[in-house]
Image 1: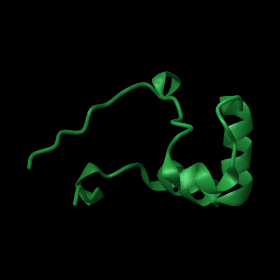
Image 2 (image 1 turned 90 degrees about the vertical axis):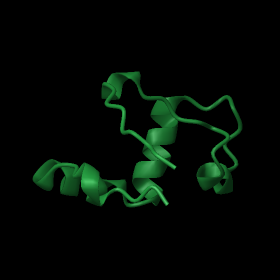
Image 3 (image 1 turned 180 degrees about the horizontal axis):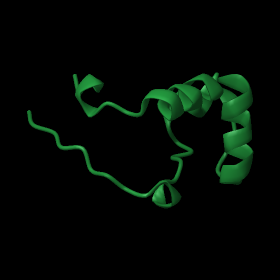
Length: 66
């Protein structure tokens, strides 16, 4: 199977409120993205990932598609 990374502007990204990774928060579909970002930031250690990408960048070859 072949995959290709598609680069998009961060302002064009949106969250999938039906994503099972965030189902544990029982958010429903009425929550705003701003509220969701705050929950993820506070609960899931997003700051570490952000700081790592800011310091080192994102290396496409390190992404595992399997």
